[in-house]
Amino acid sequence: PTEPHRTLGAWIDGVEGQQTAFKILLQKSQQFARAIATSSIARRAARRAYHNIYLPSLSYSLATTSLKKNKLKKVESSAIAVLLQKWGTTDVHQQKWYLDQWID
Image (cartoon, rainbow, N blue to C red):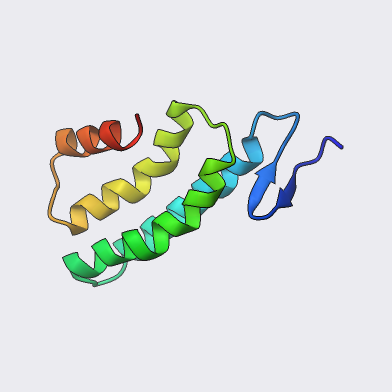
């Protein structure tokens, strides 16, 4: 039983240290970031998409994994950077601060 398997939305991986869960979460985050970046949605719609689509798609899986802080930041960084730009925040220091506050 060394192959990862999906149980109720979470990827259980006994050998590789949650690598499969990390890859799946990273793909979801990058896909969301790409969809937001290429869309013409307004600031409020981007905020709604973050709260109603993005967070629910990751929250259950995150609660069942034991990913380290640096991997969580990597998962979040692409989506957060795009969202902050849509919300009108383009300063790199503010983006870093947001990530540090969110993943603590």
